[in-house]
Amino acid sequence: DAGVTQSPTHLIKTRGQQVTLRCSPKSGHDTVSWYQQALGQGPQFIFQYYEEEERQRGNFPDRFSGHQFPNYSSELNVNALLLGDSALYLCASSRGDRGAETQYFGPGTRLLVL
Amino acid sequence: GESVGLHLPTLSVQEGDNSIINCAYSNSASDYFIWYKQESGKGPQFIIDIRSNMDKRQGQRVTVLLNKTVKHLSLQIAATQPGDSAVYFCAETYPYTGRRALTFGSGTRLQVQP
Image (cartoon, each protein chain N blue to C red):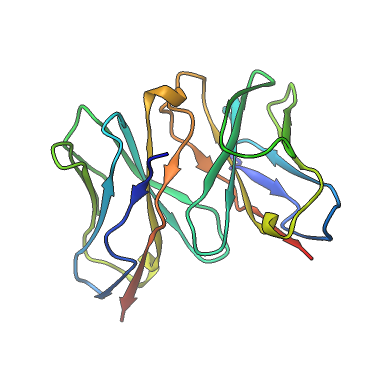
């Protein structure tokens, strides 16, 4: 049973560039959530996708956007990168849209913006 | 917005002892709580969850206690092992986000001394 996978594992970008991160959910899961984790802090919710639509969004600017594909995998896009975007980006998958379902996390993508 | 907080940033215990990690939450509307373990360089790993209609839930070597009166959550780990060394986060969800977004605290680092 494959768990949540994310790619790439590490990424280095410069300010102003754009980045795309990818996530495949756990087998049997159809909902994907994205979180940003700054060093030494807890993860912060960016948004959640279900049925290829953004269902909930956290307090992040429009530079952060996403997409979910018919096979439930998802992408996180960040435009006009800032130094403060350097963080671990985590994808979590769950089942259904009823809420309060256990979210299982992937290993994350470490993004460094120079 | 409101967030989950933790009392102790670092907890050091001897191998074989029991560990108790505490968490205070401020949102009285929260009705689903999860404990995650995060090892260095990895994504958060689900440990145990509890819904607000319960006071206690047990897993393998772990017990979560919920006190809604004082808005307090605790994770008890029995017979702590070196492999339990990690950062532990409690997370909550509340109805007005559709219970989709997890709100994390800043974490407690558990150090197990051999």
